[in-house]
Amino acid sequence: MLLYSFTITPNNRKVEAFVRHYDLDVDIHHISFKDNEQKSPDFLAINPMGRVPALVDGDLKLWEGNAILTYLAQKFPETNALPTDLEGRADADRWLHWQSSHLMPASAALKTGEAKAHDTINELLGVLDGQLDGKDWVLGELSVVDFAIASYLITKLMQKLDYSPFPNVAAWRSRVVALDGYVATQVGPPRT
Ligand SMILES: N[C@@H](CCC(=O)N[C@@H](CS)C(=O)NCC(=O)O)C(=O)O
Image (cartoon, rainbow, N blue to C red; front, side, top):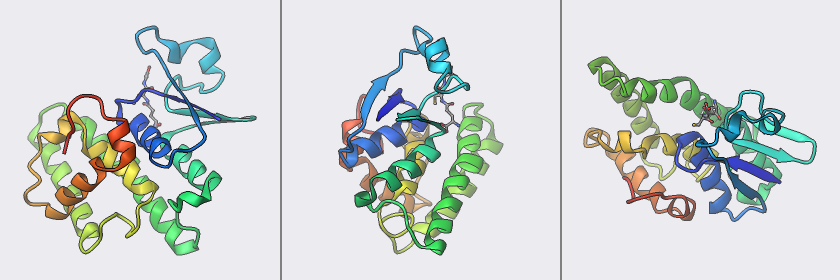
């Protein structure tokens, strides 16, 4: 199994940190953005979007980071990183969709520096803070959801936010960066 990645972006780090955390039997190839390797014909045959992460497992060519995370969690059930009961799985899917449809665009908007973008992020952090109340991890136990969401909340940009109104998120971020997978994928000084 081969993972194509580029460690320092959240979409890639979520998957790479997961692989490293559980020491999964997955080879990792770091794409060269400088050489535009992600747009090469060989790579476009794997992911026509020309983006990473992407995973090749036999005949399967899988892209979209959250799809890769749930695939790996099911391929390696010993990780216990994805609920198997109907309700638990729905809960996991909910937060994975929340990350890609709310948190990801909100974090991209933050780069504009507009006040409205800050309000949106704070609204999302408030929701996450409520979910983390009384829990160490988003679903209670460590799961793919923590990897999916946390990778967005520990970027250089997100480091600049004030987390004091969100103490549960602040504590969770500290737990996340201490995980083996995040230590192994850290580039530069640790960010909490
Ligand atoms: N929705 C995709 C986004 C993947 C994506 O945008 N990857 C970026 C890096 S974070 C990329 O490969 N960019 C290279 C390019 O656009 O040429 C996912 O969640 O995996």
